[in-house]
Image 1 (cartoon, rainbow, N blue to C red):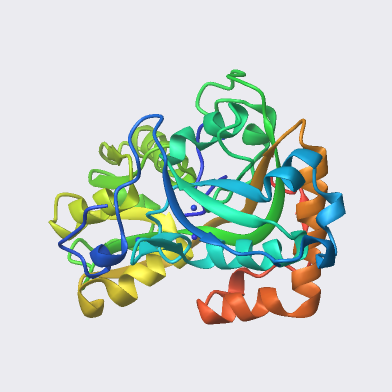
Image 2 (image 1 turned 180 degrees about the horizontal axis):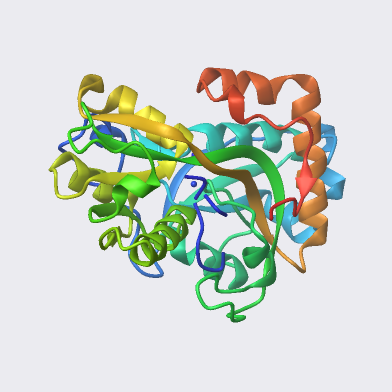
Length: 319
């Protein structure tokens, strides 16, 4: 999953219309601007009183009977649309959490770069979107400028991923590492950790006199993948599960391949506001519960991403 800290995530701070790639049928463009779309929702226990952690939830969530989840639902296999429903690693984990909490979860689609704003404006109760838990995001800091740009958020860490380099099948430009991107164009999703890694590498390329690294940024990852498929960029930086998934599925495995090692592995976190400590702590307990009862492992096995498993829930464990 680049992780969307140093991996999905730059600023406040990780498979939409890619008809040209095989996963297009499962993907849609995320909503524009401040808009969101309701994705698939997962059901919790019909009898909330039997859910072990229902009483730990904030009263407002108990009354609503639903947790609204902000997500950029165009990032297979982490989250994407299939037959009009949000599916993937995050929705499956959210389903399992809902059984512990006794409320439904409802995924709402939005641009990745705007999810934290949506959370803080109370459009969502939480974020699940391959979002890296980083100190900058915890503290509301713009990682490019170092300036405080808003109130930070808390994270419940549930997965670990690094950034991978995705290139055209056959690696026609001979990319093996970040240094090989100097003098070339890279396409990637805006507001992600991958963008931060690429910006740092661009500075290094300039300092080393190896040629300008040009960045093309897009609202969604499928747009960046399309540019790579068309040969308009040399690479796309992506979270490892996403890069691996695209390499395996796009064009029947004939479009892309992953090169080099993972870069800067770090945790994905479920984001909640600083004020919502009740929800944060309930989610932590729920995650520990599904790790203990084996549901968590089964989900990761289903999506072939067990390498990213955590052994326990952690709050704000990102660096």
